[in-house]
Image 1 (tube, rainbow over the protein chains, first blue to last red):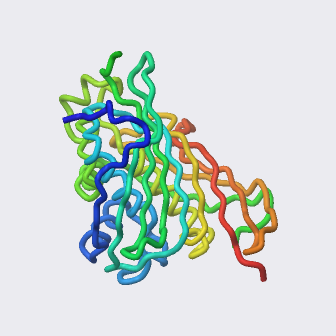
Image 2 (cartoon, one colour):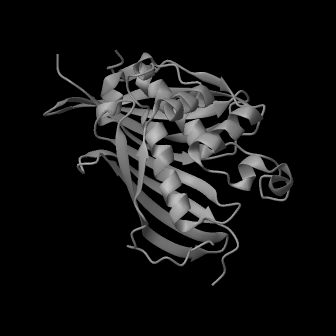
Length: 132
Length: 136
């Protein structure tokens, strides 16, 4: 169920992912990524990890159908190789009601199993149909 | 290596298809019906299926990875707005230009305007990126 009333500051459930060969190969195939950095067994595209950060947000909030992704920030800290595991943490940073829907600023952080940061994201989503 | 003000980043072009959008929904776990359900999408503000913003953003990031290599993955910053929807059948091309270079302890921080546009020139993603390239 959508949980758009989650107050600002609330942490969503953490998620763990293994960046296994199938996951990254499928991502590269779909996106058509060509940089040599991402050849099999080498480095993971930061946007592949960001997609998992977004999944953590989506799973945690249950955004309603029709929610619109309005803006995105990404900050990269270091590389990750295929096969590594990551931990995604996410939170609601800010919410407000506007005429065209609920305005949400969401943040996610991706770290390794030891907590060393890999990537951060800040997302703005407009969710429709929430009044009051 | 791209490193001087005014330099243009190498463009990257992609044809966005319904298969690509469906594939991205599967691999990302984002199955918002505006991306995968034609009937729902027809009744949305977009009027038809639209691509994920993160898919278009991946094209921009790939351009930066090609321009700056490993430095992009280790120190890149990206801030964009999604300006307009991308539909199945759209051809899009990324763009970028260096706007500034400043010294930091770790190296030169190179700042760029970046984005992605359709063939008719409509900008679908616009924003800024920066990356630290080590001295020497």
